[in-house]
View 1 (cartoon, rainbow, N blue to C red):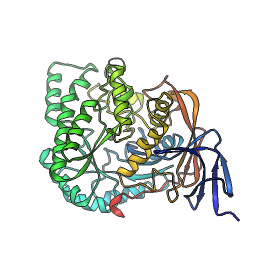
View 2: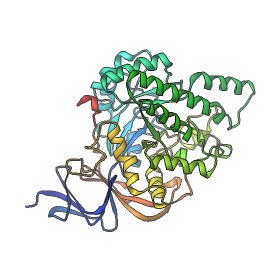
View 3: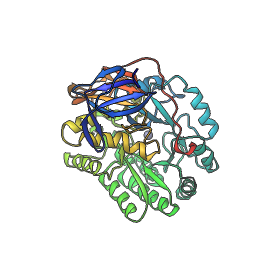
View 4: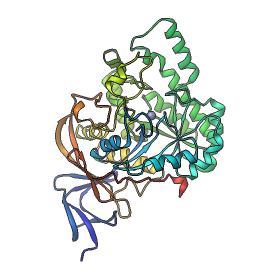
Amino acid sequence: MSDFDLAVRGGTVVTEHGRARLDVHVAGGRIAHVGPARPAREEIDATGLLVMPGMVETHAHLMDPGDSSREDFPSGTAAAAVNGVTTVLEHTHGSPVRTAGDLEAKREHLRGRSFVDFGLVAHAWPGMAGEAEGLWRAGTAYLKLFTCTTHGVPGHDAASLLEWFGRFARLGAHSLVHCEDESLTAAAETRLHAEGREDPRIVPEWRNRSAEEVAVATVGVLSRHAGAAVGVAHCSSPAVVELIDRERAAGARVAAEACPQYFLLREQEIDEHGPLRKFTPPARARVDADEDEMWRLLRAGRLTFLSSDHAPSTVAQKRESSIWQCHFGLPGLDTTMPLLLDAAARGRLAYEDVVRVYATAPARHYGLWPRKGALEPGADADLALVDPGAAWVLADDLVRSKAGWTPYAGREVHGRVVRTLLGGRTVAADGEPAGDPVGEFVPGAGAR
Ligand SMILES: [Zn+2]
């Protein structure tokens, strides 16, 4: 009788360190052996495929509970599963988790609703710093802060940031900060309204580079003074990374989160697409050289890891009000992995970098590694099987998110996830979710 439940045979195993032709053997939902073939009760033929650890998406908004016309866990995690993402860290601004009790209630609500494993992010709500310890010990994945009032979430001023960062330092808690300076965005908004502006160009003027860079600098200084490790969400440009590097050189521990929209979309696209390019910070790249520099920073690890910042609305929802009023955000879970695989096919990244930036580095940063983000004995048997040669065109009708569209429609990409395993069970194959939503809650590092 074999010791192994499953063997994934004949594929090329890719980790952040390299690749090799090895079989992956699974027992009890975990990776038990990676090496030459051994007998197993069930086999998957991965000949010609890349075998990667399941991806770890750390910034997604699935509106569940919340506005389920935009998304919910079954739809959002189906999009994740078919694209090789096996862990999603989620938060929803409309139904924020502000206390340990909120976290427990949300966890209970989500039982049986997720195709992939998930962690839950809490909102660090101004005036509620006393909740930090309870949230962290209850297993929140990380705490999210805003420096400006956005999506209905109130912003923290510098004093409030320092108070929260001090608590994070004492607890060893993880956090992610949305960085845009409140006074600068507010002043721009006042001016643009006074001018009667309603055109899409208000977005980059309102959510301007100064506002982002000032907030990033503030967060860097305060986190360093508090001794807290922090993450800067959705770094939009090389200038932001340079500020972070300056703080790192002075002793700060700042992770820089990257998202595909700051590589592949252009600032001027908003003129044509309006609300369908409204997200904040907005796209900053103007020319191909700007994009080149972002890939270079990601490859070099100065951008620490990548996420989607999946924040879906339907086209109708995006268009039902003015450019001022419509929701910020883009759908991303359907396209982030295909775009990364395509970047590897084009030589922007190595496949090892894809694993590093979208699986291993985020899992390590948030304390989920090596259970998640690793392809080695002892890790959960979460695997993404990739056909690196598959050529296809991203299209709205392939989007599983309730958004039903993608800003990358029409783009030809090379590389596709053909099968996804969660704990050794197939949760998606050939672009379709498979089986029941068996994903489970993954507690954050503070609960262990
Ligand atoms: Zn977000």
